Length: 230
Image 1 (cartoon, rainbow, N blue to C red):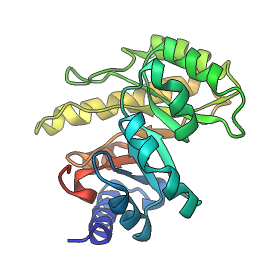
Image 2 (image 1 turned 90 degrees about the horizontal axis):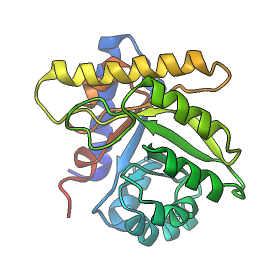
Image 3 (image 1 turned 180 degrees about the vertical axis):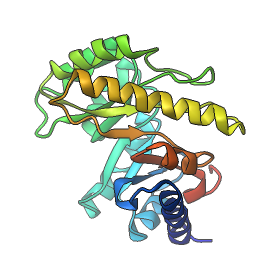
């Protein structure tokens, strides 16, 4: 099956999940997680209508995407893996957004580095919602403080929250993780009513239909679009 066909298949599954949950497919963005896949695979996805991509490693993205950006002006690229502060300067130059903002020190670093960007760097605060989550803020109080810090930097644009549910077949545990993110976002939105925090980045290849049912607005899909890592 080609990448174009995989994209169409995933979009059909998203539409069915939307029908089940009374949502509109237009409310949900599909990100192709292209880590460990080369430029040819990304270009095939672009030709299949996908313009939004996520990468886990700064160095891999830096080597892969600049030529593609030159050819595809509407390409958008986000960092979704853990970002080390010593890679932050490069990340600010390579990515349009950072979804894995998981500690105050990183906020300060990115905020300082983003001061002279022509467009603000989109950021999401990562919430720890399960024992298997690798990183993220532990709860609402820490999120409130982190959000205040982000909003103090003009070069950063806070758009919402992200999480990674535990990798399990227990749908109840997965739903609990996603519901925790929705609840945290609602609390954050009440605390900062003037900021659009509507982005909920949750759901991957193994659980994206549950994520749609629970309110996700951004799905991070890798294996189902690109196949197993190369």
